[in-house]
Image (cartoon, rainbow, N blue to C red; front, side, top):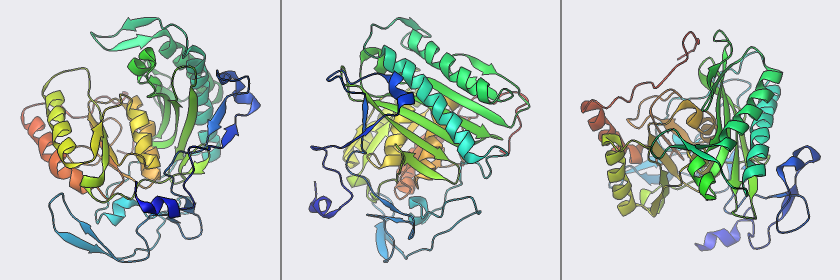
Length: 406
């Protein structure tokens, strides 16, 4: 803990948290089990960087003075001068991203347009769908789990299925002609639609089954193949004190947590970073490669965490409590919401070989942008070696006849 934190007015004393009460429409999510009062949503945890809408800057952001950054873990210094705000179109928020500050601009993954549906309407349904699924999960979180298996260790609960059914009902009620890809139910709907919903009704099912606090409901919608709107409802706390917080984003509209705009961290050295990764169920060469990356970055960073829920991990990067996250072999429903939230919070998103990312890819790295190229110095070559061995990291799946701009 450094002395600067005591000078920042935007930091919240987590010993004396204030609360937001849920609205009456959300009271179905239950009551706090430690009291008879309705379930409450804590304010954002420390540290939080406030966003100034007039200057388009956040506290701790490297804007206003020239700075020197180390390029690479053992690399040379490069000088970066202040850069002006930018806006690619009138609907996009003017925001200086960490990716730009790193000296490298990475291709945007978010949709350039969200199509004919107004942004507020689309996000409203996305958020409602995610919260509806979260109500189902909250209802079940302290009850015994009925578990079945999709593989030796890949489990699914009745709650996964019930949450997805509740989410589908919301989507179909509002957009009957949209295409939907759910983790449990597969593809349904009209393949000629420009919109594709990617639904993970319970990301981090294993954690949920064990009562470990790292799981979420994730809903992302693509417009012509690119993320347009996203909502992730993260479950925090633990047994008998479960709580939630909701991350949202629209392409060009910024990223938010419980309605407050968020931004990625300013960490510019790998040695000072906190990193996150994940491991799939197949213990093959990709799994072994990531175990080795886990070891390497544990040696040169403040630590590498493995929490077990991709959407949660990406939201932690977006809110600035982790500096980067990577993983092989994810699916579109794992990534569609999280990658947009990170990008709209000022972060960078690519494949693990450094290439342009789309949600059908089988590897992803998200970061605060400043660290992205430094992490790729090790992750990129390791990924290329996997490809040379014949490990398939091409697109996992794209619905047949679904038109995209990719």
